[in-house]
Length: 193
Image 1 (tube, rainbow, N blue to C red):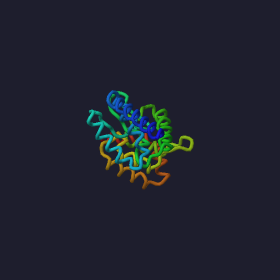
Image 2: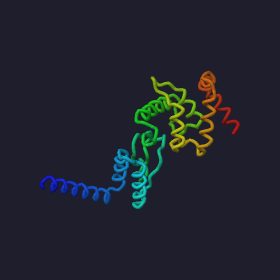
Image 3: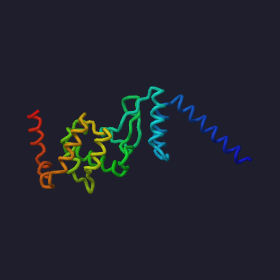
Image 4: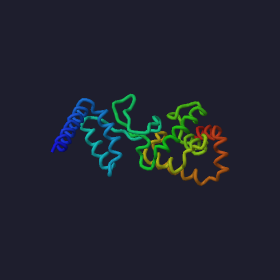
């Protein structure tokens, strides 16, 4: 009997603590709850429930964004909003996010501008061709990021996916040529616009 009593007491304390956190710190509560629910048997159902519940508290949940390079759910640094991390995208592992962060930081240094200022072309060419140690971002990963809306470089996802497919049709030699001459190509593309 004492086991049941202590067990129910702890559940009651946990429920009380969770209710307090939800009432007084809803942004932090929902961020932690969303992260925790990824371990559930049906995480998508749990995420939908939590996002719906968060909206009742006027908390907006934004999709993943490559500009922040966060792995897990996080609170937006300038706004009172929760954002999906990159590893919260189905098909993107934490190891893949580490590769993305490594490659993007390397390319930012090389190009001398933050990822938020990249064009889709620069992102596509540099991320698929850059070799940082053994890391590069594969086409399948880019496809997943585009489909999830994580690449905020162009509003037209279909166009981005189409260009990604065309990029795959090029031979390795052609891709290397574009990679080495991309500054000339970017100037030409800007002139045509």
